[in-house]
Length: 422
Image (cartoon, rainbow, N blue to C red; front, side):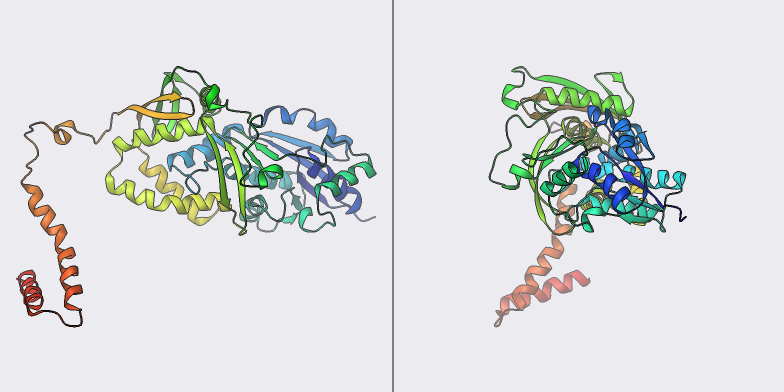
């Protein structure tokens, strides 16, 4: 008798992966081991073990990845101020690398030849899971049912569940899909596919309506060490507890709602609505502290690379050579970004009201508008003229290229060239 091959399925217990478990086992002939990653989805994990085994899985690994998710993925992204297309703090994108890594590790432990996931052939997650898996284990096989099976819609899957007595709570009329972790919750699809339709007021889960937020502003202080947040309100917290506290505070004030049309890696534009209350607070606080500490040109160099770094995260290249180098660079320049930012929170707004850092480059003796003894304002004359020289040369050159330059322009240009040479 031929031994059945084993597959590790990324399992959520929802409609898609419930059907996939049955389809892979009974229609495709594989033995299935499920893997569920806890990245902060909370109550969604309840009852998964019993359901997976009853549905035919040999077993299930439920892995607590919350600590590594925040410490090793969210915080490095925060250190870089990564923001996709000006708005998105990459909540879903950052959760995929640790899940891909866990899939590969479970596959190795179980002796599985392949992994499988529930991402569709239109989205970004298929790319993120598979690029991560291939980078970590080049000989791994990937089974992506949405790209191969005959089912084309949620209605098809619901019919499959009825045919095979698979217990699911999904209905054909689902208003939108969600994905939650410690950093955010995302909403897309369904009624949100029309970019002109406003999100339903009762959709949001992590934030109150800013109009219903407290009428009095709240001030909080967030402290950083080497660019990593370590305390809120003077209370030192670990990565998970700190992000949970930031979420609680930001959510109370309606902070962190984003509604965008973004560009997926596969070339499709999609509309996404996100809630990232804690991440939004940390983003603004971090920028405030590093504004005191980072050298101007180091900051400009980093900021010039951030769009590429952000696309690398969004497109699934966390486990790539270029990401390894970028993370080293970011960690290096964040050494000494240690200080405190004070934020005022009010009805969806984050306002920086103060910042301090022990390694600050800000020197009031130089920046003051009052009389000082350290800065000679006359030095600015030569500084400006030297920096203006190439602008003058460019202008004179352009004038000389006219069809009929006047003698005055030619003479002025020649004099300037001669002076420049001397």
